[in-house]
Image (cartoon, rainbow over all chains, first blue to last red; front, side, top):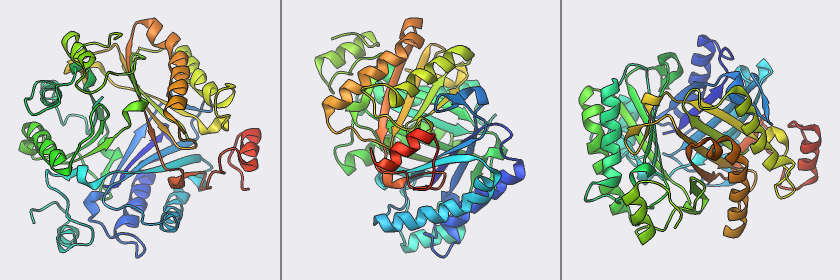
Length: 144
Length: 144
Length: 144
């Protein structure tokens, strides 16, 4: 459900850094005590390399920028304060891989109606339901 | 108007399977008796290959997953039941190319304001209007 | 903040045309007297080449189509008339690179909640605030 598309230029992240960043994002949604404890397989992170000549910021080609476009579906933020806290955790997770390497970056989150969402053809269980907890436990979409 | 971005790993679909899947999706919006009978050219399907090392599900690289991100613009679902029925048709169209090949998959639909949409610079005609029917007939955007 | 993803087939745009199109879009948000005068670095334009065999319009492969998916975050349209005027300016900016080359094209704009947006980890300043004007002046995200 959270879908993270990370647009970057080729070579900006090593294979190890991509693993590290994907893990840092995934943990935020799964094991982090302040997170939503989602089934791990809900978290999809895609690195999309864009050649420098195709990547424009302010009308100029760049190889130094990371643009992350995020979709949330399984949960919506209930208040602006909750959103603010969560985004801070997210920024902390990114920092070693982006800020501390001297890159510029931008993120945004769009929230999608969970009624228009399926995983392996199933309607995902309600937030914090017993069925969702079972999906966390087995880490796959099983009939319920 | 429906825009389908299909994120997959290279080699997951043959050229013939891509044609088959794109056709199955397109028919749902055009010729299917339960569908909206849109002009065929409204239906855009993009296969976006993502290398296995760039494709993470639950923090792990995978070559077995298909993530489909869908935008609807020309029509919005009027009720949850209508959405549910339509998504079932959509899942049926995907099945031979995804489920029956043993892949895991996830889909979501976002609904976009049709006032913020143009095709060939034109404001697309209203749903089920005579002008839309003419666009269906000629299968292109013509002044009306 | 405006994020423009331009899906096209390889070879549809030369390097110079990509620069020209990215500049025409960027100017609309920055220097155009009818535009919002955003900090230039807010404007991200990504060209995403999609092979002809992966690009389907109406169920048929094409190398002649351009699909632009746009996100607005820093500003929302206040009325339908304002949106209409702005989209016309946008279409004018595209025309020399798309319409006049004989391509077909489609655009849509989705509007994202600016509370769910960060740039370089900072909450971007309010529309037309002094802080935003400072970001325009220095053309980067600075604490305020």
